[in-house]
Length: 135
Image (cartoon, rainbow, N blue to C red; front, side, top):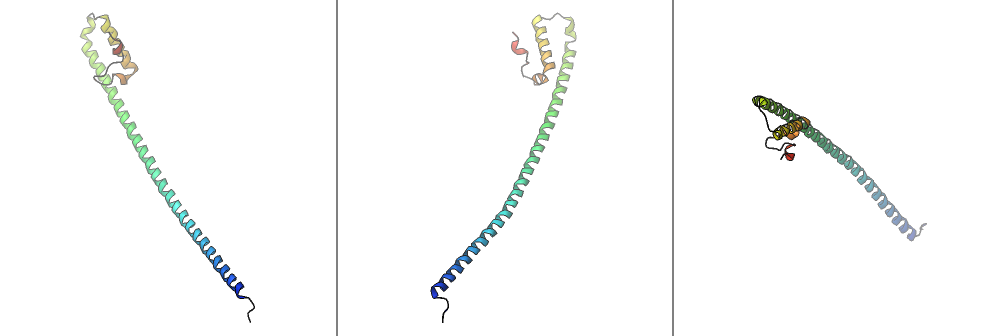
């Protein structure tokens, strides 16, 4: 004699299958989430390594630029000093001659320009800052 009718047995069996499927789905979702967590940690570590490399590269480029600027400034200052010395030696015989007023003004403007802004007088062929106002 059957104590449990067949419909209830089938319902209990269906319920057991559904519960097993839900448990399997939950276990699989947790497994996938753990794997993604490990992948996220790995991806974060890779991104941090890339950011550190880029930071180091930027520091190296900045150091190189500062060194280049320092060398250029020293070269420019040496060029200006040498040019001023050569002009003084070349102009020594002219010191006793009478020069036109416009030439004296232009030379004084150029000297003030070089003293105030050495970068303006650093290149050959570049205009002197006082030359634009000269007649």
